[in-house]
Image 1 (spheres, rainbow, N blue to C red):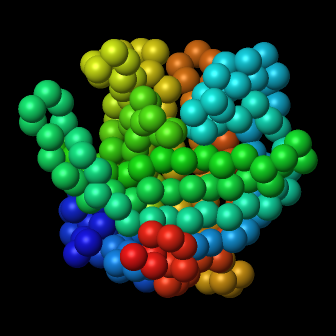
Image 2 (cartoon, rainbow, N blue to C red; image 1 turned 90 degrees about the vertical axis):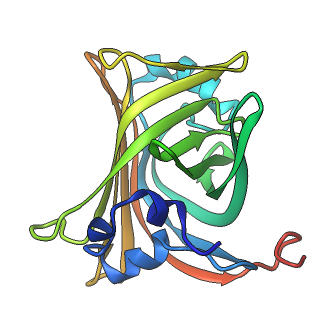
Amino acid sequence: MSRSPYELSTPPDVLARLHPRLATYFGAIPSGHIGRGEGVFDVVGTPRRWLWPLLALFARDAVMFPVWERHVAFTVENHPARVRRGSGDVLEVRPAVRAHRTFRFRSGTRTMVDAITAEPAGLVDHLGHRGRVSALLRAEVDADGPDAGALRLVSERVTFRALGREVRLPVRIAPRVLLTERFDDEADVQRVSLVLTAPVLGTLYRYEGAFRYAVVPDAGPEGGR
């Protein structure tokens, strides 16, 4: 694809403030290539075990997992894709990036999947294998300060899809996602932090860590086509 969903949905002046190494991460992945990274998460999950039964439901669709672990090795693979979006007879093919984040927990390997698409409303993250949970994201990049060049993605709307319909959660109860990606020049790694919070309940889930990333030829079945 000529432009990534991030490039299609984010104002050029915002993207221009990105750290050059992040511009590669959020830019278009050439056909026949994938983005691949490997690193370690300092923490993953939540220590609030009363939330684990709920997280176990999301784990069935590869969204979140009922864990609280430290020093978790992981890999990430970003694949360029095109997906059909819309409803009824109005379906459009839109550029997307499908991501697979594989966590090596003590209990075994688990993979989180999602697809980022460029929608008329903006940048949307469709979570899980079925994409039943979606979040409309707003991109922010500071020009100055400690987070200069980092990308923040803030959820503005969360929807659930069931029985062919999308239901938007009211703001007063909707969870909020804050994802921060920044590049650490001194350590030569990309640092990532995701925090999921909810009104009254506070932090529901989080992960944070560092990894190294590169765009490489896709040696898999799809890349060989």
